[in-house]
Image 1 (cartoon, rainbow, N blue to C red):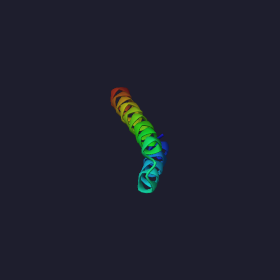
Image 2 (cartoon, rainbow, N blue to C red; image 1 turned 135 degrees about the vertical axis):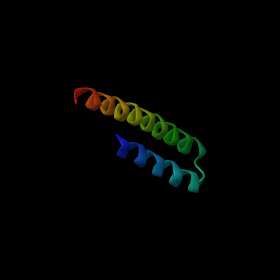
Image 3 (cartoon, rainbow, N blue to C red; image 1 turned 90 degrees about the horizontal axis):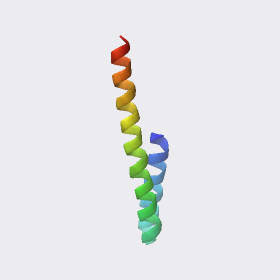
Length: 53
């Protein structure tokens, strides 16, 4: 999932360089949402692994 966030971030950077503002904003928004989902899932799995020990 983090890979998809990085891919959308790179797409947003390339689109911003070429001046496609709407596409860059959309790709950056998707990357941000995926990154936050990744952080939440990583924290949940960390807490669960600590509880199981």
